[in-house]
Length: 557
Image (cartoon, rainbow, N blue to C red):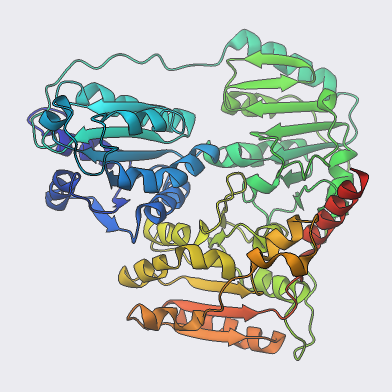
């Protein structure tokens, strides 16, 4: 691939081979040669963001939909603006290729005091920062590009983490000096370890009358959904997801029971999961989010924990066992649960009908669940929405995007833009709050400029409600720092010089009408519905239980 190609062309050849057809970023004078090369390149489009942070968020969501993504920024100011998004991709196991254009190689050798630097002649300082938030960094040259670029892409794909490549502006157009690529030994399952693990799991399952499957974030990132579904059907066990793994299992499937949320989630789900004789967890991350502030009660001695390349069975660890192999082997283990899952009711299956009533969480979440369609991409912001939407049952084929671990406020709006670019044939719905959208509202402009037509719901509940819920040390009235300016969100499209369908709703009937119109018009234009909730402390049941728990903890201190 490297023969007779410039470094920039070869880089884009490698990205194109991975299915990347758009690259996000912001122009800067040190990445002009990268962008000029891309402008002439066939098959990849540059998607200009309003700032580097938002472009990084968009690239993150693009990778969640397509499997991998790329981001271009300029040296120093651009990459530092993007580093929060890249750190989020690291935290959330998202493979993202961050490409940075740097000053001329001669300037770097001379340690010149160039703009966009710390004025100390150190041109490696930002790469060193990125060493801590990516899985791989490399300074590209014509001599090493044929080795370093494929290596970085391979590591991003294997580890499901971001990687960092920096190249001087004057080297992008230089011919690549081809080198024989280093042979990579593909890691394989250790058959002895696999067989020992299977025998151990057999002994655990034989006396079990009630087993359950738990799916989490790495089920999604490592594309294990089909294998998990086949296993669930073979074992005839109920399946729950952890908060960060939502949509890792088909939520329309009769064996799906909901999100397991410890003491805060649906009690029926909690009883089934915690009452199981054996829990098979696929790709779990035992974060405070997933363990519901450590209220999850799971006995590790009754657990089979399957990670991408290792697993634990009770207290025993088995290394070098691939998740795909153990999931396949378990299908033939001979266990099948006698008791059927039975009919499960979900928190928002019942519609709150009073049309004239003011909007509340108990009434708008059932309406959201009812409007969702197969194959939708649902993008949810950190905050009250993230807890309420976790309990909404998704239709078949839906993709759920949220930052369950990193939880950077403002992520969802540019993420929805990235999702729109990643798959132009699927409907995208964005659920964000008034506080969150004020951080990254510029990407509504990017959506409009690129012909994106998501349905955007903005929950206007007078400030950072999630922070008011979490801070139990101080009376809500004293938390003035959680107040925000009042915007007219329905005027955003007009401010950005474009047209959109907009509605401002306060009652159930008004929301119903707005949803019907949005469902009709979103094929033609972006739709934005501002939901005004009068009670600033209205929230989903999950969040109310969490606050009660935090208040109890505070009193015990």
